Image (cartoon, rainbow over all chains, first blue to last red; front, side, top):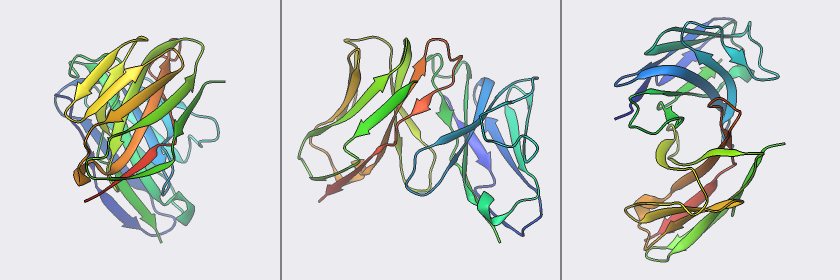
Amino acid sequence: GAVVSQHPSRVICKSGTSVKIECRSLDFQATTMFWYRQFPKQSLMLMATSNEGSKATYEQGVEKDKFLINHASLTLSTLTVTSAHPEDSSFYICSATGQGASGFPDTQYFGPGTRLTVL
Amino acid sequence: EDQVTQSPEALRLQEGESSSLNCSYTVSGLRGLFWYRQDPGKGPEFLFTLYSAGEEKEKERLKATLTKKESFLHITAPKPEDSATYLCAVQEKSSASKIIFGSGTRLSIRP
């Protein structure tokens, strides 16, 4: 299999607070994890790519100091939205590739997503 | 610049009415093409990976095909539960696992 989980599934927070989202690969080792955000009726926009034990690579226009990514182990990556504001409200989705993920190299397997609402 | 274009943007079919979704791509060298299904409020669900022109993959009522410039997702005798957004994504040979998504096709199957 290739199962990816995310926690929490939805979160509501006040403006100015920080929110942490966890992404876990449950049955394979995720050497690379990706973080996307998705606005209503739009496709996925890649925010950053992270390899286990290395600093994340951010896409152009994504503030690395605002969206902190940590990939400390082969099964866990976290995205922290710091000092969140209403414009950060979105659907955040992680994905992972790695060893043992159903035998398809390079295929990204996605988590269920986290709905963030900043009041 | 690498590009992925999906058409149509939306498609409404009657239950049992077969059709095809298109994904046209422009990359300097294709490493892989991926099809995903996404239901509202959920993450994309993996369907197929295609690697070379002429390759075909099937799963239940879905069949994906690949040429050097495009991929088709054929849906045969669809059911209402096939309603979803279908996303196509491509990976370039030099991209080291990063993929580029198309904007998706919203498929609606009426009973």
